[in-house]
Amino acid sequence: MGNIFRLLTIPFAAMFAGTTRPAIRPPDLQHDSISGFYSFVLPDIHGDLLHFSKFRGKKVLIVNTASECGYTPQYKDLQKLQEEFNDRLVILGFPCNDFGGQEPGTASDIIRFCEDHYQITFPLFEKVHVTGQDVCPLFKWLTDKKLNGWNSQAPSWNFCKYIIGENGNLMAFFPSSVKPFDEKILSLIR
Image (cartoon, rainbow, N blue to C red):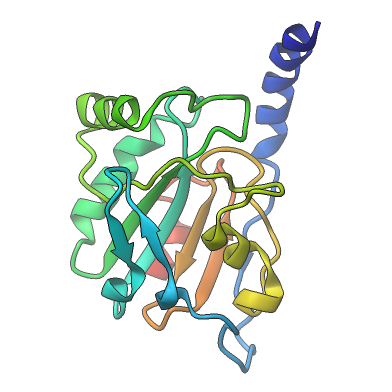
């Protein structure tokens, strides 16, 4: 019975996931984030620690990803975006199984899928939780306005996007339905 309910709710949840509204950092916000983005050190999908301080001076696009989602084809545009703006942008992918169980694979399954289907070269991280009690510290920072200075929107589905400015401040949140080459995203990257 539980599985039937889960299968019936996935299409409805996905349908409403795109209705989350984008959020842009208020231009008159006077203070920077309380807790620093560059202090994060997280394990990548191979288990190696990646220090976020290496991204200083570039914009960062953070995306919670999944291999079996209707939004999964966004991987293609994320890779193109990384290639086109690699001098000023880093994309970080965080596989997540929180929404509809759409990232059930192991790290090696995820790597194989991303390389075989989308030739992904941007950093992927260990599978994380982006909501709930076990939320990854980075996503806690992204969704707690006491920590990031203004935003409290959490991912509502797979492929939500957060943009970090060159100075480490959270600049914007975009729901799954906003594609990587949307003008709202491009205007913040350029």
